[in-house]
Image (cartoon, rainbow, N blue to C red; front, side, top):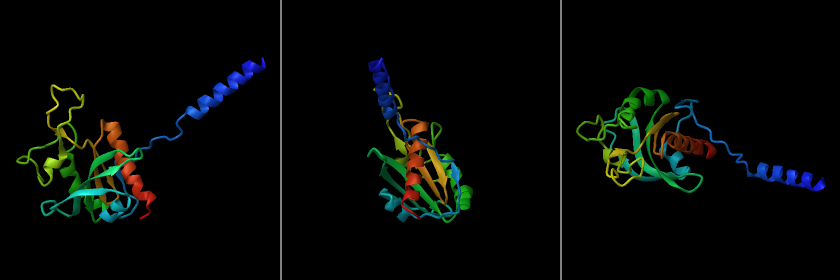
Length: 179
């Protein structure tokens, strides 16, 4: 009887220790707590810039950067960061341009895009299925975005769930570094 009790106790202990206590949270697509971020805040969170784009054709944008950030498992993920002076300006002037380049219906041809600066960096040739037959299909790199305070963060991922988590992780890294 003692052995059975010991075995059951051990199984409960092992099962309990094996549970992943970290739960993924996802931020709302639009978050405004009155904070203002700059590219320096992203750099402080270890965001690495590959390119800074000319924003003369993007009304009211203070800057747009393409780069990468390593998530909590060390995987480098591509992001595009767009910064406005306020959350409201990001909503009023940024959303239409972002919606145009996100997801399966993205406009990826320079001649059709409302803001073509950096369009080549918003494309990927990776097929969702990773199959060989359509591996050269051009697709949108970014499948989700957050309007987080005064920024718009465009995020890549294997699917929408991963992209949402990738956006959330980068945004929350700004909080952990202080503002």
